[in-house]
Length: 116
Image (cartoon, rainbow, N blue to C red; front, side, top):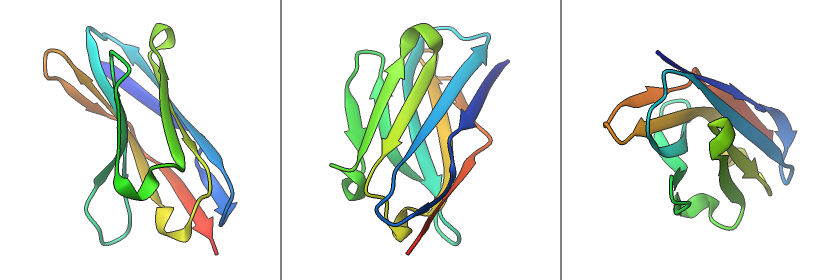
């Protein structure tokens, strides 16, 4: 069993910042990729950013230059620093963990609301 616990969501004004955290615990073996996805009302879940075990990162175009993903491998924790937030960033943000054994785990989600 693997548990992902997210924190850091909330309500912020346009242009503000938030930092999301996701801590993984349980029977974790060989973490490959950790990342963040989001789902806005009426829309499909989309990748926001991901980071590999080697530190390579990928971002969706709409957040490049504003969001930064990082991880602390010793703590099995991934972070998402979100700056210059826009109302379009409003969504439920989900943490994701993938292992080298192709196991896929999700957090419960944390709400991010950006007011205009």
